[in-house]
Length: 149
Image 1 (cartoon, rainbow, N blue to C red):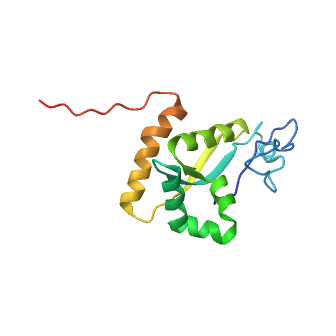
Image 2 (cartoon, helix red, strand yellow; image 1 turned 90 degrees about the vertical axis):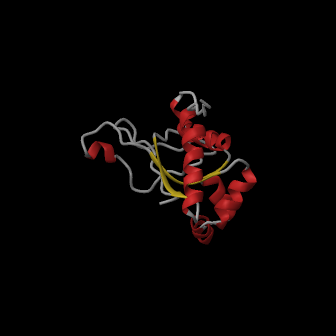
Image 3 (cartoon, rainbow, N blue to C red; image 1 turned 180 degrees about the vertical axis):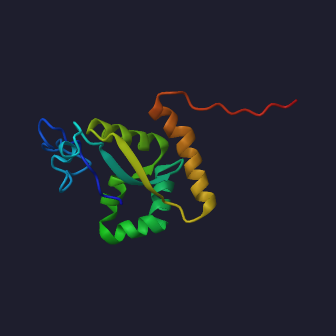
């Protein structure tokens, strides 16, 4: 669910305070959950909606018009929904990923592709796979070419 985030819990100190200006507030009830399971720490998960497009304006427009965006607006102001979710160009989304990783987020759950048609969903998934994921994984973007023989 969007807005539900977990921060790392360790056996040596629990959650601690979130960094100043944190994108993800500390959760309720995580406490020393890792210790309860005999583990040193638990995974840190962020659930987000995705709306990726060639321009920021197109991504925002698509997100706000989608069912996911309309639902988010029923619960919070547009500025907060846009800030907490991955809405923007591939470069903007990479920036949000970097900021979340710097805060200790270790896993991401894309809870919604903010699109109301199959074609739009596929287009966004392909853009994310081709332009975002290779940068996250540290590998070059896949090369596609058409040969005329």
